Length: 238
Image (cartoon, rainbow, N blue to C red; front, side):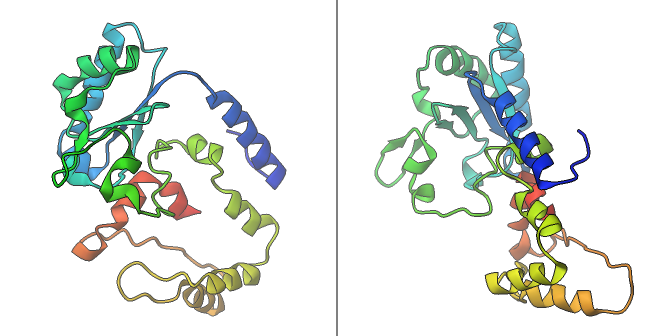
């Protein structure tokens, strides 16, 4: 990837990536974050890839490794797009049926759908599940849309646009004031205002400043942060 020197460069790259990613191919997204990985999602991923190769579909189907969407007790979770079908508690031995029945024929594997224990109602899509239905997910919404290891995926969905604005259209003081007006706060429990923290750091003596992302997950209350760092690390950097 070439160096980006202006907002125009970023927008040009974004259009190019979006054009390249436009495809009629079905996509299988598999959560490989800590929760699902602990329940065997890596083996599910390997089984899906092996089945696609066996059926000669490697070039016809995209496979995307994604971050956490929550509801970890129901993992491993697998999504099939653009049909937006969502399967839970998937096992490696389900790969053949998922590829043959859902990917090829467009049929649903009923036993892999979520079933509400209270009502018995079956859900095909995430937004049909009570756990997700009323959620607003400003931080985690893009976890399923990108491979966290792909900067191209993030740029294609509008990523780094805010960074571009901060670097090319705003002064450091403007950035700090914007953060203060947004009332952003730390996620560790203390809720210290981020804008004041940045302002204090900027005014501190010395020419070299460091930005440190605290990835300590020893505190059980902060373990939620790994969902963001694993699923969309670019948003942390931005």
